[in-house]
Image (tube, rainbow, N blue to C red):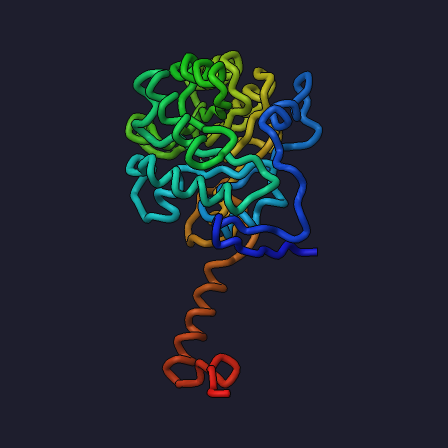
Length: 289
Ligand code: KIV
């Protein structure tokens, strides 16, 4: 049976029927991996809007309001231009649209790297103003102190290593990481440092498969792969990529639908009916009683 929603205009909350399960907790996600084994892989997709969250919620363990919204929603060239205000507005919409999945919000570039105190101020605003359960930040060993600082103060943190898009200007592009031994060793060390600092999960992005496997074996928390390996403890994709909203997507994306074509042909149909004056028809037109 599919879920339907009733919008409460006083709270902007959409109440689903049937009533869903209780929202998953961050410790429940963390405990999916027991003694190095994750029997039930963690399912994560990005979500940026309330309606998208409603549609994805029942199928996912985690919804990530990622800073990829810069490119996907705002048409920005990179995620570096994304602001904290954007993340808070979209993160709150995703929380309003979901009941079951735990919601994680990305800390945008420039809002957390300076010090653990800066990260705490930013992350506290994100949790307080969105209602999300956790934040995600990019960087490995260099961010470990910050991850521990937040965790000890009640803010669960998801790490993000390998290809870290906020570092595109240092990395020189979006190519897969870990092809040299030195780079591979650094990625595994980054993962260990985040795990020891208390990250509840780690996104491993754009790395050659043996590194993803090595990282997954090296850490006690779940790894969530994107362009990594099916052997990670979970997977994430940008929803618009897997829905087929863009002509070009990275090789690691599987298209589960071709939504761009559907939108384009619906718009073409609508335009032809407006031009032919066949829309609106009798069914869509009010007449005096
Ligand atoms: O911003 C984002 O969407 C992400 C995922 C690709 C992991 O960080």
